[in-house]
Every structure is written in structure tokens, then in C-alpha cells.
Image (cartoon, helix red, strand yellow):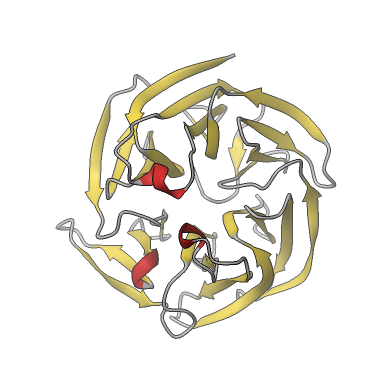
Length: 280
């Protein structure tokens, strides 16, 4: 059973449960929005780009945002303004997409390499890490439009979704933030987007007009059907057992900027609470 919590969005992305509310990027509007359990929403920040902008929080509570087209990682200051936290340009000037911060303060950001909004041919993307001491380097390769990322509850594995390949890939996280032992974590029916992990180590993954809970190896143990495309999901709520799904009609990249407002936040009660990172 699903319930609609919020409507009238452009395309919701990068959902995060933080400080008692669901936060997400309203792509196409330059807004980061938070909504509570009763559906009351508020704009929490305005960002300098319409898309892509994904976000997370540093261990000290500071909000950081991927400003994709500009190749920057921005940090919000106490007065609400944004400053440059890191210049991602030395690795790639554009194409930056999703982000997750692990429990050690490593910031993982991925890059899709090609511009799918302009119909450029696909090319393998990568994952970069920004360590707490400010070192930026490439650590994971060979991803077909890397998208959502999550870190397992033990902090030892990074899982990455690929939108142009039906699979989840995983790497071991080393003490210095490097990634090793790249491998297939699960084969999927469809390409994926924003993912999250639960306390049993299973992953919730968008599956076109729905969302699936999948175990390592590819077994689908639960499926939620929707009436429109699911872009990302996040476990949250007071007990961590509410699955929040960002859904909208999808007619191609123009859907992000054509003024339509078909986006929704849809909820579904689950048996297993969220865990790992993005943290709740």
C-alpha cells in the first residue's frame, strides 16, 4: 500500500532523511525542499544550478551540494550562503552527479562523463573521493551513467547504481577512502537511480514505475508498484521504516525544465529500518 505525501514537484531527487524530515532536490527549480510526516513542506535552500544537484551532510552537520554543471562541491555556511568546498574540475569539469558521505567523512561523488541530455553516446563514468584532509582522486571506474550510491551499515562497502546498465556494483572501502575489489553486487531488471540500504543489508532500488528491495546476488524480496517513474528512494520516518519514493512522469530530459509538475513524494511502510549511509 502506498500513500502520496506531497505533490506539485518538478522532479524530486537525492532524498535524505535528516533532522526529522525528508529533504530532497526539486530538480528544475533550484530548490532543496524538506517535508515532514504530515506533508508540510518548506524550501530549505536555493542552489545555483537547475540540475544536477545532489547533496548530503558532512559529519559536523554542514550541508554540501554537488553543483554538477559547474564542477563544484558547495558548502552551506551558517548564513545560508554557499561557498566552494572543493573544485572537482581537476578530474572533470562537468558531468558530476550523485554523492554520499560515509561515517569516516569520505565524500564520494560520481561523474557520468557524457551529456545524456544532449544525446551524446554513452561512455564509462567513474567515482571520485574527497577525503577529510582534502585529497581528491578517482577511485572507481567503468560505470554506465553512475547514479545513486549507498554505504552498507558496517561502513565497509560502497554500492553504486547505474542508470544505463541493469545492475548494482560494489567496492570495498579501504582505510584511506580508496575502493578495491570491484564486483557485481546484484543484477537488476532495469537501470537504477537513487538507492538506499536497510539494516539487513538489502538495497531499495528504483525500478521504472516502481521500487524493489533486492539482496546481494539479485534476489528481489519486495516490490512496490507506482503509476509513474521512480527516480530515487530513501528510508526514514520516526522509526526508519518508511520508504520515501520520488516519482514523476518522465518524457526525457526535457521533463526537468518544461514546467510540468507531476512530481510526487510517495510513501510505503516497510518491515526493516534504514541503515548505513546516506545516514538517517
